[in-house]
Each structure stands twice: as structure tokens, then as C-alpha cells.
Length: 388
Ligand code: NHW
Ligand code: EN5
Image (tube, rainbow, N blue to C red):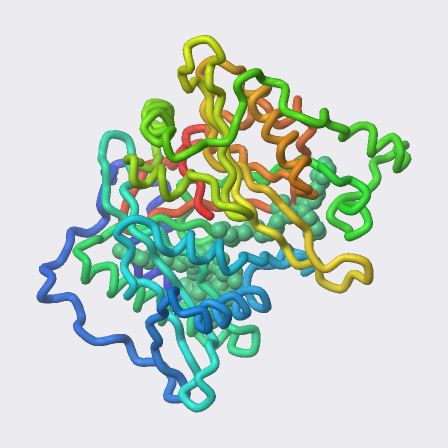
């Protein structure tokens, strides 16, 4: 069934019933001297190419590869369109490894035809903080599909991760592989319902007119919570404290320090937005919310080329009710001209999705760990990790 995945240290479907297997590493690390020293062989027409994201020309090529060949929805109506600035941000967190930005080029033309990446992260599973790689942006050009290139890319990134003495990884996918730790649902909150309907992202509900729909999704012009403002550099310590305390509640979550928070959560225009509530009396930071910007190309539509989507990232409420905080997030996203606000049913998101008029999408997101078993998996509400 899974000729490649059957050979890998991941939860195998056949072990699912066996609850005697312990949590933690599936196989032990091997001595670094035993990690294969040279890259896996590629078909002769191709070569490995370690990408330098400082290089604007490379970044443009990577952007184009993904814009034309990355993830689509099940009806091929939309395709993720990560911006160059987003890719730089996503791939260069604190202590990133350049060797983990792995391209494949055609030997002759030097055209970039495939890619896979990893970034380092500390991820906690129950009480075990583990150094992992977060693997993302696996992509093979449409013309080179089904030739078993993906397993070569995955083996090669694994080898380069092992060379850094890291033996675990986290990744998400829309497809089912052996074996998800949990399966999440995408939810969508219309901000610009007319455009969403025009491009086929959503449909006019039964017994609904366009004007009733527009009214249904209307939002105030400005956030409602007193003290709601953008996060700034001076807030990093306070936000780190809030977030660490909050993420401690989940079974699987990142172990963020101040450097991580500065990188992942300080606002960057059209990449990541973060807001907090500073108490007007005590000036204490009590609540936090964030979203990242990931547009999708609209395929085959005469009127629109892109959909501007915000994706819920990390949110923490200690004083402002989470629903009110997220309503303010919707309001600022609307102000900034996003068409839709997306969220997964992770963390405590279930508590506001229906109330704030999110509807379930047709897509799922499966979460995976490599070489780390979590017996019986977890529920989406026990997951405190959002990958880009
Ligand atoms: S998920 C997004 C993945 N990208 C896309 O969907 C873009 C559009 N599709 C493509 O570019 C986020 C191709 O279809 C891809 C497959 C490249 C997906 N993950 O080359 P073949 C991520 O980036 C398996 C893992 O012939 P292809 C996360 C498939 O099950 N495996 O297929 C990435 C089969 O194996 P099997 C996937 O269509 C996580 C084999 O690939 C997969 O031309 C990576 C077929 O290969 C997927 N999304 O190319 C794992 N899709 O055993 C990281 C298919 O079933 C693991 N496959 O026969 C950890 C590594 C680090 C460890 C460190 C200790
Ligand atoms: C991880 N880094 O399927 C990336 N998106 O629901 C890899 N559907 O946008 C994994 N099909 O439901 C990515 N509209 C896996 C996801 C791939 C992309 C994907 C889904 C998620 C999506 C939309 C459009 C569907 C178009 C036809 C959808 C309904 C919205 C509606 C709004 C009003 C209230 C009810 C719901």
C-alpha cells in the first residue's frame, strides 16, 4: 500500500491496535558517524541545489515553483500562493540551517523543479521537549509527478536533519499517510462574501439573497476591546510569558522562547499580524491573537486572480473572552481587506467558530510526527501547534 512509508519510523497502520507500544522515539538515534555522508542519488537529469534565500533570484524561482505547483483544493479551484516575503520568514527562524532548504534543478536548464524544506523547532509532546525539524513546502513540478521523486526528497531532508543530530520531525498534509496524530478541520469565516461566492469559494445559502448574506457577515469598522493594539518589539517578553503559560495546556505544542516569539509573532506586513490587549489601567498584557497571510490563486476565474486569506495562528485569552478577542481579529482582518479568515479546530478554537459565523470547509489537515509515537493519538483540541 505505502511502499515508501512502510519503510519509515512512523506509526504504521498495522500497529494502531497495539497499545503496548510506548510513547516516544520509535527508533533510537544512530551515531553521527553512521549517518550517510553523501546525498541520495537523483535521476541523471537532475541535481541537488541548496537554496540561498538571501538570493532574490532564487527566491523568485522558489516562489514561482510553488505558485504554479503547490497545494490545491480537491476541485482544483484554488492554489496556495505563499509570497516571497512569507517564504523568507517561514524558512529562516532562529538557528535555521541553510542545508535544509533543498532544491532539485534540471542539470541542463538549471530550472528549479522540486523543493523540500525543514526548520528547527523545539516541540513538546506531553512532558518531553524534543528538538525536531518542521518539514514544509514539499513540491514536485506537475510534469514530474508520480515518478517517486518525493521519497528521494524526504530521504534527503531526513539525512540532512540527522546530520544536525536531530531525529524527530513534525509535518502536516491534506492527504492521509501513516499515521496522523490528529486530524483537523478547516473552518472559514467570510469577510467579503460577494467575492467568495463569485469565485466559487462559497455558495449562497438556501433561502439567502446576496444582500442578506452581506448583512449576515457585516462587522464593526474598528476593534471593540479597549486596549486592543498591534504587538510591538517591547511586548516580546510579555507575549512569551502569556503564550508559554497557555501552550503548556496542550499535549503537543511548540516550546517558544523570546527569540522564537520575536521571529514568529512580531508583525510583518502581509506576512504575520499580531495584536494584544493592554489593560488601560494596569498596562498589563492580558490577551493576544495573531494570523498569517496566505493568499490563494483563483484558477480559471475571469474576474479575480487571488483570494486574500488570513489564517488563525496563536491566540491566548486570560481576561478578554476568546470569542471577543477573535471578533476583534476578524474586524482588523476585514479592515485590512482580507476576503476570508480561516482557522483549524485546534486549541480552544471550537469555542468561537460557530458563534463567530465560521463554517466548516471541505478540507482536512492531518498532523504527523516522524519517529515519535503518541499512543492512540490526540484530539484537535489537545493540539497547540500551527504549522504554516
Ligand atoms: S503537505 C504539502 C505537500 N505538497 C503538495 O501537496 C504540493 C502538490 N503536490 C506535489 O508537489 C506540507 C506532489 O504531489 C508531492 C508528491 C511532492 C506531494 N507528504 O514522488 P511520488 C508538506 O510539505 C508520498 C509525505 O511518486 P508525487 C509536508 C506518497 O504517499 N508523503 O509522488 C511534507 C507515496 O509514498 P507511498 C507524501 O505526487 C512532509 C510517495 O510520496 C505526500 O509526484 C514530508 C509518492 O511519491 C506528502 N504530502 O509527489 C514528510 N504526498 O509510501 C516529512 C505524497 O504511499 C517526513 N507522498 O508509496 C519527515 C522528514 C524529516 C525527518 C527528520 C528526522
Ligand atoms: C499545510 N502547510 O482544501 C498545507 N482548502 O477547507 C498542506 N475549501 O479552502 C495541506 N473545493 O471549504 C493543505 N469553502 C490541505 C488543504 C488544501 C486546501 C483546501 C479547503 C479547506 C478550502 C474552501 C473552498 C472549496 C472549493 C471547492 C471551502 C467553503 C467556505 C464556506 C464559507 C461560508 C460558510 C461555510 C463554508
